[in-house]
Length: 332
Image (cartoon, rainbow, N blue to C red; front, side):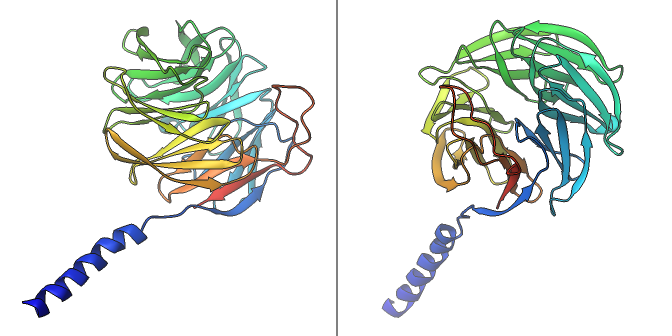
């Protein structure tokens, strides 16, 4: 029996070890230079396979594999985010300084029209149950609901705080980070009504937000902390330390990993083992200023805009980017 047990034991150890050694370690593989002023916010992976990079008064469109410039969407003053309605071949940008949204044709990148929204639209997203585009308006503290079939604002939803990011469950509920109140509000899109307000305390300043529809878990990126909430009852499930300056959270549904982009120059990778069990996998070195994030789930590639920064001139204000240093980091 000894001669049988030892090989079996060795095989078991080796088999178990494959899982241990199989854990993927992420790193910056390359970077794509981006033409422009280097004042940015969100980045998005488009349905056409291109990256859409917000860049002050324009959106730069680049090939996600080569970094080659594909086009631009101009006249987007203070642009923050980009959203898409694939069935209509339309894209939408939230233009914070102009208090409007630019509608563009995805295949040609041609501007179709502009839509007036609430004040200082920040994040923008597509809500699939209602088929509407949602803007988070920081200054007017509301959400603008746009019908992409008519490109008109059909509703405004007061959230009584500064909305930062929104995610949808696909069944009619929309969850919104309220940055200045450190809470998440749950909005019923069936009647455009705020149903719940859930505190994130002791965490502060929620910015990025992602969602796992299968486990009904919300991932809120706060100041040096990722907070996991149960989207059914609003209870906090977990709190995990992350890097400083998080402004974006991404979720890979197939690998069950959460990523936070931290402006200090790190990306925190977190594993969702079960709906109530989470662990930090690693903190990946990126570049100081890389605070927003997008993921291409088809290739598990992560993209983070960044730039070299000038010395800070005012406390609490983001330093300016050095000329010709704006880029997109590619992490795999």
